[in-house]
Length: 326
Image 1 (tube, rainbow, N blue to C red):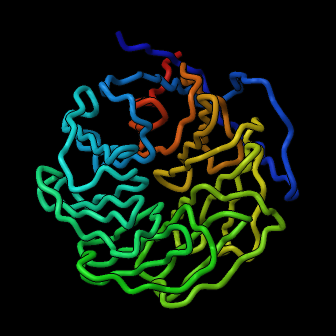
Image 2: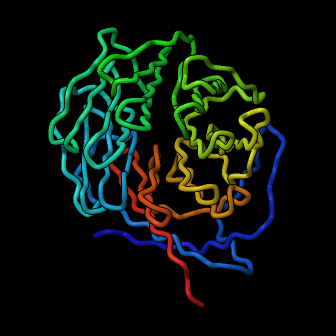
Image 3: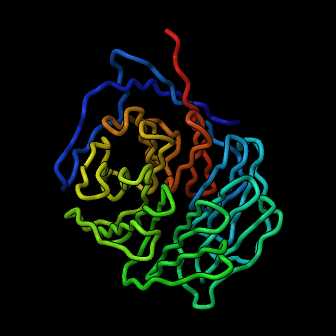
């Protein structure tokens, strides 16, 4: 039986900006104040998977994919009510998945694994690299232009992944995000943040004074991006990374994934079932009770009100935002 839980969340106008360095530990709580009131309903979906799920991607509220250990790819066409395993060419761990529509997508992972589909995953084409690179994340903006990052790896393609151009790096990179073909960020271990303004042909390091691993990044504009890290760290820039501000996540648990639907609505997830939500552009991050204790890895929006989270042990959570009528 699915477990459904709701959290009353009210966003008010208080801005919480902290100097870089750390944030306090907070007990989980509901936030109630004057203004619109929302309930986040969390439903555990049945995937019949025991392998850890390391990434999730939805193109709309019906079509989604999750990937993970042992070459796992699972697919839904009904918003997660049913998840179906898909056959592919690898048993290697898959760390990243990206689709540009309900048909065309890519997965990447260990041992240089890269696969592409043109039919929603019924068939996968093996495009794997021969150098056994550890590939951690992938993003595409269209059928041609894409980027992959990993352990000492930066790759760019202009032909849908048929061929890749390497860009040298000594960094272990864990996340990549492009809001448009020119502007993008990559993040990784030891506080690495790299920014490009020319589609990835060249990259500029950015400095935050933190040396923790940056696990994920969500760019929602040429100058606007969010990063998550250890000990509840959430960083935000609104000026292209010239300055990064530390936001109060109300937790010291490690955060692993972050996603935004627009400038206002975002979710961050992490260890011990941690879920944090914002509806006011990150001024306040409020607790959503997930009902699970395992590590939550990544989060994906289907639309502004329907969100999916993937985690260890085959966990998929659907989060639905609804306005509470007084």
